[in-house]
Length: 217
Ligand SMILES: [Fe+2]
Ligand SMILES: [Fe+2]
Image 1 (cartoon, protein in one colour):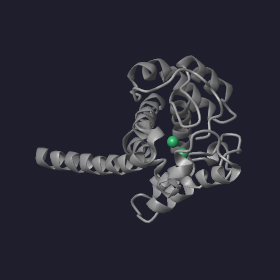
Image 2 (cartoon, protein in one colour):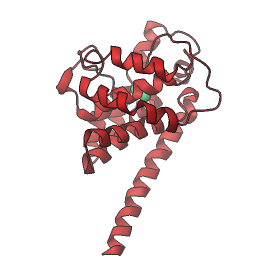
Image 3 (cartoon, helix red, strand yellow):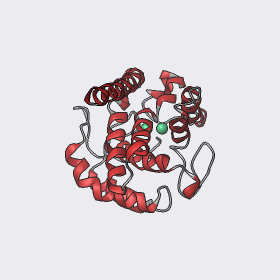
Image 4 (cartoon, protein in one colour):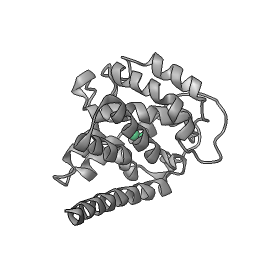
């Protein structure tokens, strides 16, 4: 009995380790997103707990959060690491990453659910997102959770096109976008967690102070 439990635990840990290694490969290519997937995965897990999402569903969302930007592997380095503003054409290439990620993961039957969450992580509550422009509860629960965590990390991190913003500005941005970009119920759960995240999340040392432009993530 205990041996079975240990075996199952080790298998789960092994699976998790492989996923983290895959993401390290992506982060070696995209210097500005170092630690991004880990922070989004931690926030998504905390949000699941806050929303009472447990068991396999929580695990699926957590893994999808680790993998959400895996499709950036298919975007040229010079676009990913470009300092300053992207051209419309470059921006269109970045916007392919959810579909590329979905195609990378969709080959495996076991990863089907995860690939669906990845495909929709840039949809918006009002239908103005991509790639499908679906809205509200048409968007998978996991994608709605990741969309919020992803934006929070984009706001509070330094990127090639912007500096980091304070947690107070982040709170204002999330509040302003409830029922626009974000599921209002999930967004309110995230607002409750901001004090914890502001203490617990780890960012690279070279983070700069606040200067907000546009979140293009
Ligand atoms: Fe993304
Ligand atoms: Fe992301």
